[in-house]
Image (tube, rainbow, N blue to C red; front, side, top):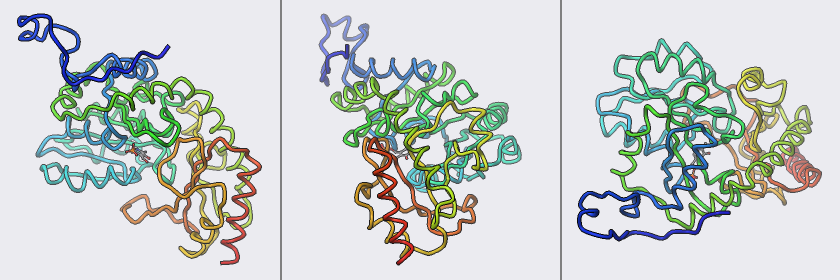
Length: 362
Ligand SMILES: Cc1ncc(COP(=O)(O)O)c(C=O)c1O
């Protein structure tokens, strides 16, 4: 059964000696409650981690570990195809704090050795890539980075720990926007960060220092969502694959960016490391510009137009690659990201055909 929701700022101590020594398990709301412990324990079991912090959003799950490990005067390597707000944080706040930020090609693999410096503190990965779904060679990158003394972080939101366990592949810190599949219903924001034994203490210290704890009701909702994540994810996986296969080669579609499709350039790498695929991928329209992309999106009746993903309903958004400096790709037309929800697959195909027809006549 799920534990009760504990609301706490103040926690009482039985006597002054216990208070001064802080010698009881729970001491103050920011430092954890039985509710946050229950979710952290579940994530530790899924990720194989030594400890998990719970933060108020997926973006906070990116920024808190970066603040905990990147130091002034150090150098941080981030994959060029990273979630845009991660890049924005690095380019603004990290740089302002005296951290040198450099982006790398998602296909770099062991070649990342050439970019490592004596002061490289963090290598930040995200695989598959946000919006364009390139798959990285995580074991090769982790091996080189760790030999050089850098902490390896990975945004693992796409796969969830059910389809990829970063710590088993040499990553030190695994990050989730629990807003997506763990919450699963598009109405809760939360993030989790799970660390191996070596990095847990420093991550936890950073978390406590920043004071970015989460609301207990949201933590509870994610714990509740986690109970059904496996079966929801399996449904997302099969529906997304069915839709992706149907879209591949369809008139008006130049390519489908889904790593579980055998024709995807990184399919073999994906197959080697991942045990499943989730419900989000992109399509490239066969020519055209923003006009065709907007015609496609505006014709959709089942797919909602909105950010985020991992909920039960299908969503579509146009993709901008304007922030990329390396992984810009040579796409034949506009890129559109699709989140495949739990609706009927045939209904979704009908809706997408409406979009393709509208783009063709725009
Ligand atoms: C890969 C990835 N990481 C992190 C986040 C941030 O999550 P949140 O929306 O909870 O801040 C997102 C959100 O879209 C995401 O796609």
